[in-house]
Length: 165
Image (cartoon, rainbow, N blue to C red; front, side, top):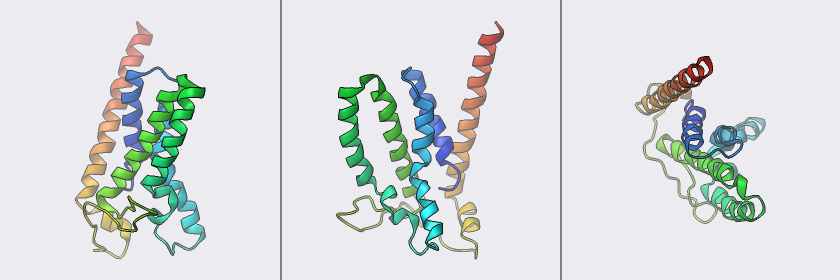
């Protein structure tokens, strides 16, 4: 996915905010939805020799282990923050699922190095971004973005209408 991670995080955060008034829900949904891609910094610093999905920040089992450790601790030490932490890890998981649509992911790393993806985007054009943008999976990204925009506009109308009344 190229452009839909943050809008998907917004949709997740919007849904979570309707169910919980826990602090920072939207913020952590947005951060979690893009956090695995912070490995792009290292990817570019090393000259892009290894696909960034091969880094530990894109290993679902790493995040599952982190969540399995953090959530019980948060539940015990700061229970009011549990919904916020759960949304954070859900957003990270959403990122992994979205990446799996059209890019190879190491779902079982470090125990199995098999890569999983639902479809392969062929390098039809010399620029990989153009190949992604002209592949049918980019329509899914656009749908996520449009849906997030509609949700944001509807939310702002509701909030603006309440403030004016």
